[in-house]
Image (cartoon, rainbow, N blue to C red; front, side, top):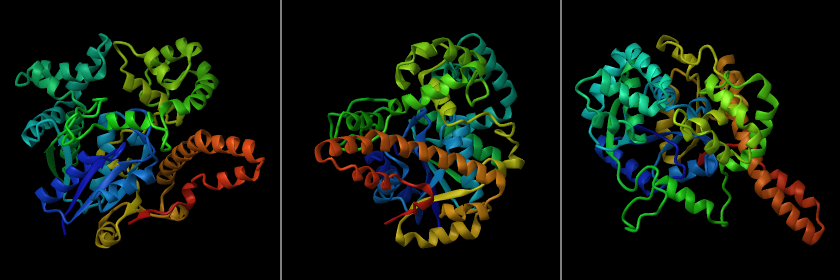
Length: 417
């Protein structure tokens, strides 16, 4: 039995994602496609447009055989830690044969040599990047410049090639696979369709739209329930206000300089996205700021062991959580249970008895994040319905009925198709 894995956000799922699943199955000969998906919050530092169960159903309908959740600690981290956490989790499962990811060239030879160089010269690269950061460059630009400065075989144009979001992740996946000496084989697929950040739907209907364009279309509509970063503005402002005197440099991705900047401009806070734009500078990208603010909101501080050595990697990904599966993928689930060296969590009610304390603490982060997401969704939609209905029908019992619809993580079962 062959299994190919895809690491994804599906924010939201679209035709390009279905294409990747189909082509991966065809090219690798995989019997099953396993998706490791971000939960309710994504790497850009925002809530996913739809909750993880809706997106899981989309993925299963689009051809995935099973969907697992990437812990929020990694799902909301920089590309390096996002990839490191995700690939390490897949490696723990001991039954994944291929890792499929999109790239701008579709050629593994564009990534494997540089990944090996970056791993071998990690300390030198880090030192050079830090020096460029001190000169005021953003991290993506500093990383790109460091590559062209340190490795003569890579020109500035080559380095820029590795600055696109898909290529950054592709490179990080290859780096982590090499570090782990993993048996998982990388497979890259030429990315098709609109650009990663293209906000417009393509005029050619045969082209795949970007997730950014679809999110713009969804947020312009009133026909579906969705969540955006600005829906979390009150919660974020309260958190920033109550911790301003202590600063924020203990949180993931938050330097002292960024902490000072947050405190300086807090009195001008008008909303989540506007505050990100206000804080943006030559040194700090919008995404870096948004991600930092999300870490603060989710109380994700920098633990001493956030980046343990690879010999301690059980601390990094100490469990795998099942979000959904197809009924005909039972052999895949059996294989996970048989081969994985970390526990498979399919029922949260069982988690405390099967997980070590450190693992349960990490899972608790996921539960808290999902509870925040569902609460914000409820406040945005159910409470509005409540006010409209009670005003029209004088029926306060509606609130009790609406509240029953607030998703409870402990009662939620995996999606089954």
